[in-house]
Image (cartoon, rainbow, N blue to C red; front, side, top):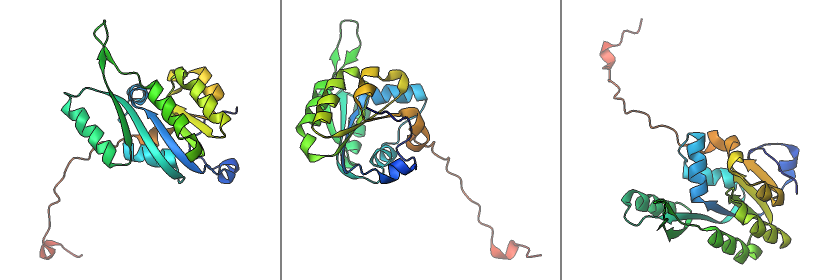
Length: 198
């Protein structure tokens, strides 16, 4: 299958003719988190959704993540995600023998992609995990077009090879990054009579 490494919003004649139909978005939260760290950005999830949808009709956007129930900041973030267009699929983090914590959601992503395959035309998979290559291939057999979006250095060649389109997340960096907050500045009002019109 052909792979394209251009941003979703590119304006070549091929994209003008392309009809993505109804789209479903499947985001591997952990994969995206580490990609954003490598890019040195914080993701603006409102911008991300708009960029990935790119004017197409969105059926649903899923966000898969491991959770630490005691982390109030994370709980607040997930609540925000639910209220802003994302269907959050969460699994408790498990502590591994080396002390790290992990939650593997590949099965959940694959099952949702397959279960909904008749209801959408294009799947946008935000992950570089090669374990999802077979699910992408099977969804493709069902007539679904699959776009994989991930950082190239973190994306399996097998996943790229079975996708209809590959978009390097780095090409979307400017479109999806959260802008730094501008410091609040007070403007000093000048009374009209003190302005010299000359």
